[in-house]
Amino acid sequence: QNLFGDTAKDITGELVAGKREISTIKSVQNTPEGRSVTFLYRWTESTDAVKLLNTQPKIGKEYEAIALVVEDSGGWKVKSIADPEFTRTLDILAAQARGEKL
Image (cartoon, rainbow, N blue to C red):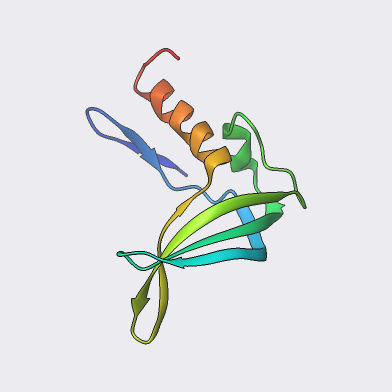
């Protein structure tokens, strides 16, 4: 199974790294785009795909993330999630895929 695709400039892929569950909602703030939700989550399962990450997530450890949620059909839909710890890892992988030296 091919997990990656490429164009002239980028290598992309969708991988399932595992399962996570939210353990604590720390704050909810209104923003012009919707609501910003800061929360803690734990990895409950991981797949072999996490081996691609420089720092693999630890099962049971709490990590902090921020989600931007927007109203959609009477509920809330996640528009984006930022996870400072893993965003840096993904930035490194993307730079390496582009042939950049860090």
